[in-house]
Length: 219
Image (cartoon, rainbow, N blue to C red):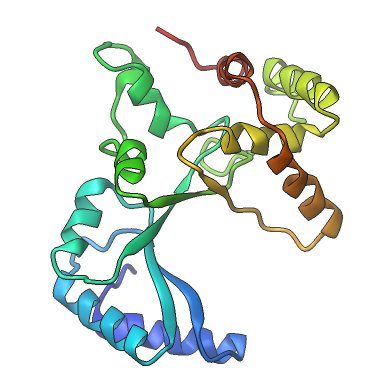
């Protein structure tokens, strides 16, 4: 169930604080749009949580510009983050921008220009499941289903003394929207591998080379 009611938001925060054994959360994100949302209720919940020192910063997840603007009609705290799926095999938020004024599949607008909206409004996009393809069908790195993409990842990994996974992260990092990559791992070596990608700055031609190797086309 999706529930952005004041009661549910506050109860969820209290539950998280208890489980984490902490006094506050750095960031609270509203996950997946609740079409029954009342912005005033969200505003009351955010105000009380911030005033009580239980939440420092706020944001959303998987929401488009219109949904963010609706919340902002009542919410006074800045909405600083939006978690969205993004990676070499999930490029919808940039495809539509590249294919403006075209009639091909890439021109289909999935999210009402959330990438451009985020840049204009200084809203940080956090990329979740950056290595996934399809609807949680698996990971594309090292997957034989994507030989062209993996060949390019391996090529640039050798060039930059990195790994295919590191290059996949560097591709996200290269976008000037300053997208943050979210990973889920308890393995130190994997964290180090991905963190090292922050030192890699792909050239523009390399970025588009990977984009096309992932199966995308340029008009």
